[in-house]
Image (cartoon, helix red, strand yellow):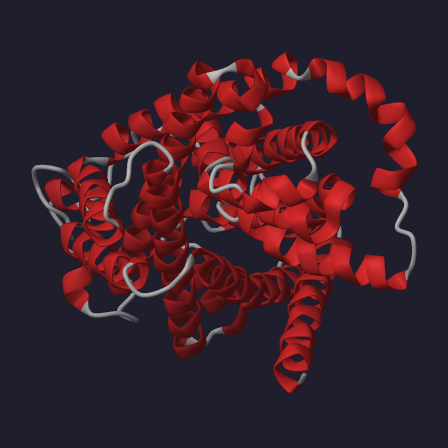
Length: 412
């Protein structure tokens, strides 16, 4: 048995876990992509975010039950292995999840560089290099320290979104007159556009699945982790829909799409101080989200290595920081390579596509586990069978819809 200094420690409590979960979702994805979504579907942007959140909720419920049944840092890979009894399939899912983490972190690093360039004409590549290495260093520092930093930045980014809503509250007075334009698609082509925008908006909800990878570092894990997953997603979904509504009512969607920092454009009339504050918070959200993704990718690699479906050296825990240092270093280097190679939208779409494959398999995995073992441990939620069925169908359908759009665009 490994020495205690070579094991992860349970240092994370429920309130911090909720903030950690919100921080995994409310971040650079929404701050950067809210303009892209608005540019695609105009006033229907809140509807696109609501639809993406509803699709994410189905999978989040499945992750909540699985995290209580199988509290392991391997996360999705561990769930699939338990469900299908295949180490190879588990390894495939594990590497897909790691890919999601590093591609998402690269997406956020690119977005953060864009935010910084709104403040000063900084060179892109060196700025991205410094940002990614700094995030890797924080992730290697320690889980309690990393979570504490995530909590602080999460408070700032949520506070900034609430400020936008409160400071632009008068525009909500126009909502009754605009409600039909926001909620009722004009024709089937608009519906297709909203579904396509939802695929992009779905990226802004990615992160709740990362929470399960710190299962071995959570106190009262079977009770705390499932509750935190659902609480975090619910808070995030409500916040996104409200802020997206304010944004499209306050600023023409085309202007939001053209802005590097779209939410700063929303508060532009309130002066340079407000603009600078939102840009700075946007930058922190990118750092925050990327940090969470690096932590997640390292924990999944650690969990896989412990179960001997990844190289054993990835399971090494540094005795001083109590973090999986080799796995964290590998994740950081992969993020850096991607961030220096690809653009924001391509990385965001790649992340969404990979995670939808994982969500489909995890939902099918829960369905299989529930049919084999209907009862759950004490304090763990027991969901009806339609939840994983709906989650699998929704994830697969959204992925296939987007693939069809890619093929159509390529053939045109």
